[in-house]
Amino acid sequence: MQQSAPAPVAVPGLVDHHAHLLRQAAGIGVAADREAVRAFHERVAREGSTPMDVLDPSPDGRDLPGRLVTGLGRAAAAGLVEITEMGMRSWDYLDALIASQAVAALPLRVRIYVASGLMAESSPAELDARRADCGPWLRVDGVKFYADGWLGPRTCALCQDFADNGGRGLLFTDAAGLARRIQPLAGRGWRIATHAIGDRAVRTVLDAYDLAWDDDPAAMAAAAPRIEHASVLPADLIARMAARGVVAGIQPSFAVTDAGILGPALGPARAAAAYRWSALAAAGVPMLAGTDYPIEVLEPLVGLARLVAGHSRRPGFATADAAPAQALLPTAAAFAAISDPAAGRTLLTADPRTVAPDDIDQIEVVGTSPTPFCA
Ligand SMILES: [Zn+2]
Image 1 (cartoon, rainbow, N blue to C red):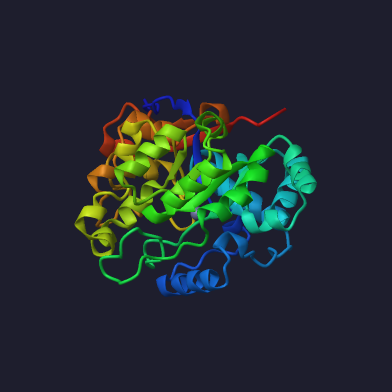
Image 2: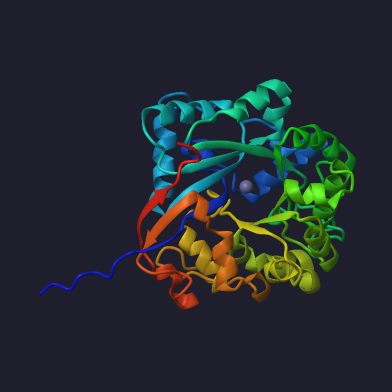
């Protein structure tokens, strides 16, 4: 007699709170070469702009809806019921998805943060109209700003010099300038997310949020502005995020990918202050996990394994490096950051919350059942 497989387990839907999936599916991709990224960041800083204000060429229109839906299908196959596109640089993506969902349900829910540069091209009334009615599978949530560079190319903004390079990185905006851009949008209900990796950038963004919300912690907590990455975090910044209800958007795979460069880039003391997600959780800072795909892998169970066990042993995803201890979260907190019961359910061969950390990425995806935003 053939043995039947154990019944799949339904868990709160797995979600990706920070990806660039639409852009990747459209064939635009990202520059991963460190020197190229550094040169780009330096040029943008010289021009007084920010990377989110430099728009892409419009995506190639040939079957854009079809290509986007193919990309979303890949995410659904990985077990996701929702992705957040963090920094949409052309309305063509939204128009293509609106056209697609008129024909058939999308494979999962899509939340969109619009790039600050695209926002700047449109009138407030146009923007509100864009946001108001997107249909069952799409939500335009907010706007993405960009405060500093990246750790790898040494362009993130630090309070002290890099350990292996005389500079302190690049800050693309000051607090007053960022607050001026945030205030009218936040006032119209747009959620705010800002890329900040170095401690000088995180401090600047927190200063900007204080200015934008007039130092009113209750108003700020209600708006729940996000800081994306929040990688280098001294204790005082963690305390400020907790006190204001500022949300940390973290990337579980960064702690593994960057494990080998933290020491050289930051020196031992600050390396221990990087990816301090256990301290964020202990302080009560709300956390959302995202992949930053295609910079990192899309598979949520690989990310969850890295966040709980510090590594993934899944064939094709195993790496020599492991995340530092401060980047690990207890399973319940990690699962909460990477799932959302309101977004739907994911069917798995086992519940990641009940298996040993090393077994999380052995779990297989059986299917997904996303919940539309509206009927
Ligand atoms: Zn990103």
